[in-house]
Image (cartoon, rainbow, N blue to C red; front, side, top):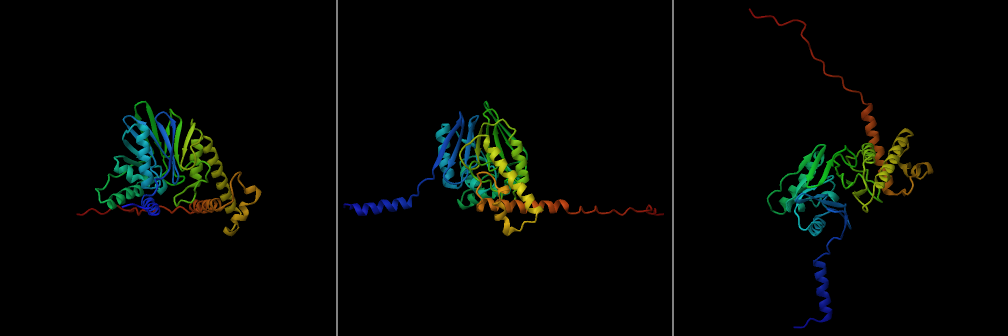
Length: 315
């Protein structure tokens, strides 16, 4: 039986619909044994060799992206196993691929403030696959250090910023920083998380600016340099100062956009668009709550009744 050309094109078209294209992932070698990937959607991912295995930073936007990244890791590392996955925070564009890595044998590491959300993600995925529940996450409080061969790597929690569970990964000898969303390149920082702390974020970036870093793998945007820290910090400082100004001068919400367009309130190379306006609104809301909490009276300690006489002894 012969298939006519028209019928063949229909068959091929149906096959294309049934087999969606793999997510595109651009891989860049940063230095020997250290790589980063910029997917077409979602957050950036990094990985490095440590002893006989691989440590990965963030997991991709979804399962399909995570699977492609695992293939790229195998290609670049000669098939070495992924031992650990560090999730910089629990947002889906960084953590949604974690079940794929866990299924491949990686232990998942996150901050304790993100542990409940990340563990729920792992357990839900395991239940939907009908497989045994994956092991829980390894949660850290302040710092974790990897020693693998000649490479040193440290995972730090520097306080609440983009979220209340942000981790960074530093390779001090290679001068490489995996920043998660604490640093972005060519994008606006996102201040609208429910647990964001813009002033804490500013403090974190001030500390990071003092590190000896040459390469930044930001949460979003092209792989960059230490200037990305300064750029993100400049934005946070301006937004925090605007939040203070708007609160002090009692600017109503409906006038935010107009005030942001005034020359003194503009930030170079930042468009007064929906994202920037939403960031300032979020910063004002968070700062207002912080000031209210700071000015609230401290409740007096509960008084204790002290007996004036010792109890009478029984005869």
